[in-house]
Amino acid sequence: MRPHLVLLVDPTVCDAHGVCAELFPERVRLDPWGYPIIDGRDIPPVLEVHARRAADSCPRLALHLVEEVR
Image (spheres, rainbow, N blue to C red):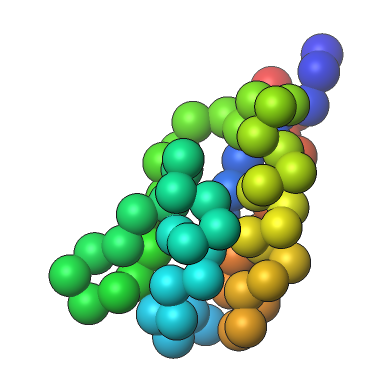
């Protein structure tokens, strides 16, 4: 089985800076208060670098790129 990459947000840590949506608009949009709404689909290899950059740039470290084996 091949691992699937998924983007997760920890809402208890997020402060709604919006960096994730700026860096990864393909899978992240903001709600009216500026908190991220994550598209739960798997991250394809072509978007992986963008997902990693968004997760690494989160000022509160609330965004995580994780591998799930299904």
